[in-house]
Image (cartoon, rainbow, N blue to C red; front, side, top):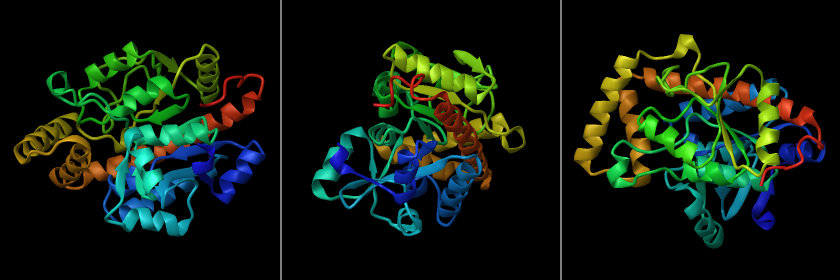
Length: 312
């Protein structure tokens, strides 16, 4: 896979000098937010990571190459292009073989980050078991990737449109630790507490880094670091529940399926909440970026001996 990777100059220098790097997905830019808020958010997230002492590495596939660390023109392309595919694990080989371009999901970004030797990845929320997934089998590839690929994913829990109890059950079955960063509750994306518990509460980035090292020493796969949205930015749970119920009914009536569901629902939630869901989404991603930078710095500080099982 090394021949498919193209590291940006900043990321390449950071890897050479063993400085902390944080991976970022690109579907949030291309499929998760409208222009120009998507571009503003991408730039803001990268700035937050730099302010935290790490180097941002936004990942996408452009013209048949996995790009790890993008420049201004590439970010603009992701934010404005209307023909970019949404790439998960199954889509990566096709894009690479055909010279295609696309934005990477959580699963695809984990694969690319691990191949580039990046241990920490920041996103908004992971995918999971969709509501009704017990009959439809609509389960995000993110969960399987978390079970197999050694990357720590910093997120505000799973997207609120999902079946959160079944998502956590699936993660438990596949051996994925769910660590709460200064929280004992699994966050629900727009809200701080889903009513479900995490596996362990970690108070510091250093504690998270030590768990990462132990997870990979014993041959484990990925792990989740659940970082709740800031209290001031969190939404009213009742508002969120009403909007999700309406959006889900509309998606069902329209026959929307598969990878089109999440972008559709996020767009409808923005409309149904008068834009406050988008503001919350941006706030939680920026908060995750700050947490991810701190964890990447702590991971780097452990040194090579402690990091005996690198990402991969």
